[in-house]
Image (cartoon, rainbow, N blue to C red; front, side, top):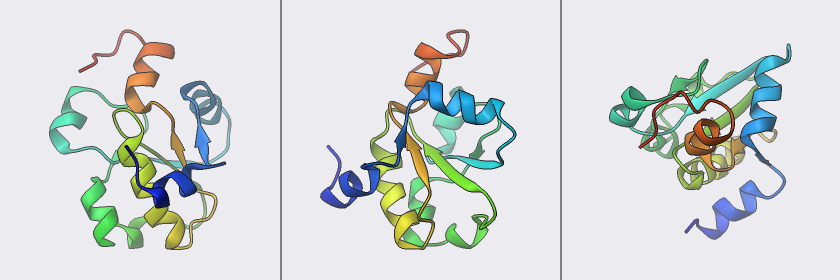
Amino acid sequence: MVSEAAAEAAAGSTITAAELKELLDSDKPIDLIDVREPAEWEIVRIPGARLVPKDEILRGDALASMPQDRQIVMYCKTGIRSAETLAAVKNAGFKDALHVQGGVTAWVNQIDPALPSY
């Protein structure tokens, strides 16, 4: 269950795995951020993503490394952790940041079933 702040942040800022695929296939520059833990990243990831664990974002450590010149899109396993980080990122001024509903699980199920799931 997500917090109230996360639910508010996710309203209108949530995309599906299919919408992420469209974004990745377009020429629009995005920063795709996986907010899971390193052990999860080793199992499966969405191509083109970079790992920035949720704790680093919530502590504020990772905010300086986020680009101002491209849209930030975050995902986790199922969408709960990325909704939590979305609230923090939006509060830091990245108003157009998005997160992926269903996370990497949705990506595997809907876009690339050849990838491992856990």
